[in-house]
Image (cartoon, rainbow, N blue to C red; front, side):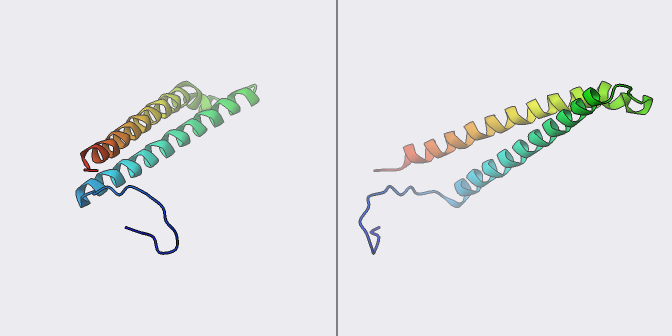
Length: 103
C-alpha cells in the first residue's frame, strides 16, 4: 500500500472475518458491561445521597437502603471487573493477530 498524496510507512495485518467479529464482540460487550457498571454505580450513589439528605427515612424506602444500595454497589464492581477482563481479552486477541502476521 502506498498513499497517493504522501509517503508514510505503516503495518497492515491480515484479519479474517471471524477474527474481526471477535474484536467487534469484545468491544461491544466491554462497552455494554462498562455502561451497566456505571449505571449501577450512579444508582447506588443516588440512593446514598438520598439517605444522607433525608433525616427521617420513610418505612417504604427502607428496602432501597437495606437491599438495593449494596446490591447496586456490588453489581457495579462486578460489571467493571468484567469490563476489565473483556478489555484484556481484546488486547490479547489483537496481540495474537499481530504475532501471527508475517513481516
